[in-house]
Length: 118
Image 1 (tube, rainbow, N blue to C red):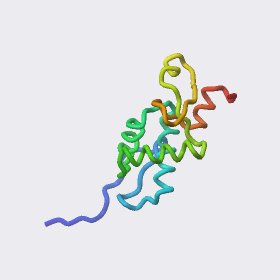
Image 2 (image 1 turned 30 degrees about the vertical axis):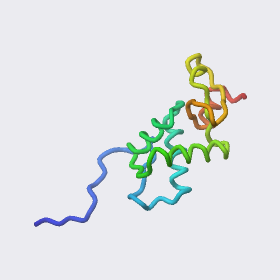
Image 3 (image 1 turned 180 degrees about the vertical axis):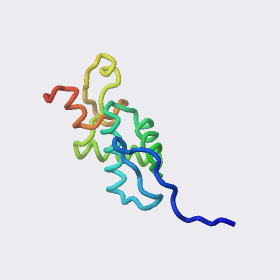
């Protein structure tokens, strides 16, 4: 019976997307940074469920509720903005209160859309 413990070699490039480490090995700060990197890589505003799904596609092992907690912490630190969904339809980035429904965007990405001015 073959019994291989070696991991299969990677066949794709991960230049543009962060990759999670093996299950259970990411510290809380690493997971929070992973969420931010995923949002930055997306380059567009996303709903929290879409941020969660993008993280899962990149190998994250944490859940949607955890993703929402990290997004809240990233808003508090100024790394992420919560923006008005309707304003996005008008091509505008309008920051809203974190308790309101909306989309999330990395602050540095929002600056690019705003042309560097607030």
